[in-house]
Length: 432
Image (tube, rainbow, N blue to C red; front, side, top):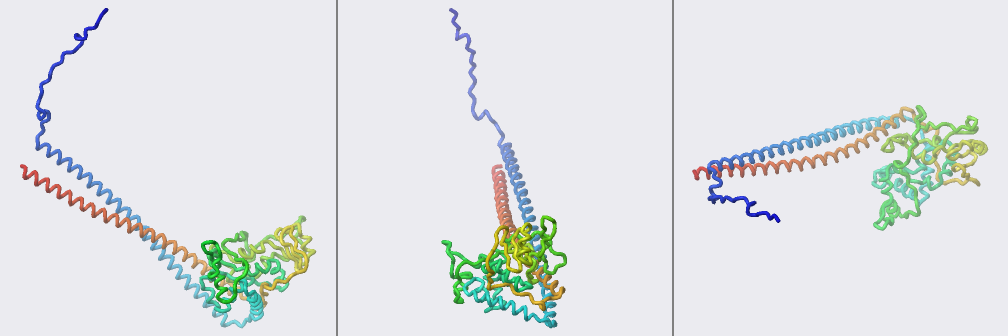
């Protein structure tokens, strides 16, 4: 059997001469110093380029933030200028109204008497929220409107409208009920929140809000009370009657299946209440007045008829309730209020014929209201700009601090690098 010869397959090995390790690499010391010097210089150049790049980026950031700060400053300056102009316009218009009052001989005695009667009835509800609030107003007058507790309050439902007829006043008051007639109306939820505070366990804090006020005047508030927040109501979204100083809602008249208007239909309750001109415009942040918010929320499309028979014959086209001047009442579709009429003590005041004001007066009041509303919007815009300016200024100061620190660190690095180069030159000089 063939056996391979292992010895014949081995390759001859030639021994290599052993050399001194120092002979393997022979480099000139002068060349080594040049290479190291170049590497040091290249690293220095890269570091310098990095410093220049980051410096420029910080400068650009500071420039952009600085422009934002300047823009917010200019915006606030413009808003304050516009607010000052509005304040001057409001003052001029108020002077015009003052001149009218001093020169007119129109008397509103009957109107005042009607309001005094309503006020008297409210004050008789001693332990109600409305009674306590009106007691505060009676004691402190116009100053009460500036208190933190009351500055957002528009008034009591019963005092925010007037009607032409005593009978209609009684019917509308009965339809709403005493609790609603005594409801407090606020512009915003902040006003609602100020009326009643709670402790950590959710219990009413009796030493604050209306509860605390009632205790302080010896009238402890009892039971629940209604508060209506205008900004949370869904306003009427349709059109208004053209050229109507009362801004009545332009609601289509009801129609029977035959297309005719029901006999005896007098109108919608929401349009039969007269609103003070100061409350017709710009009570909410969106510019709405009392009619399209409060009154529309309370009455919606409540229809008014001459007689109960007229109301019943119009059932097919009654959608949001109806009343009749002889005492008929439908609370809402399918819900009839029967039995004897029950007068509510607190009613809407009656509008006096002698209290009518000229259209120019009403237009002036409308302008004052609108200017006041625009002024409040400008104040809100100024607060927002101030907050944006504060944030931009904070970012600018922080970026400036970062930039100055970087410059200081860069200067320290440059000093160390220069010292290192000087020492290196000295070493080369002494070694040569």
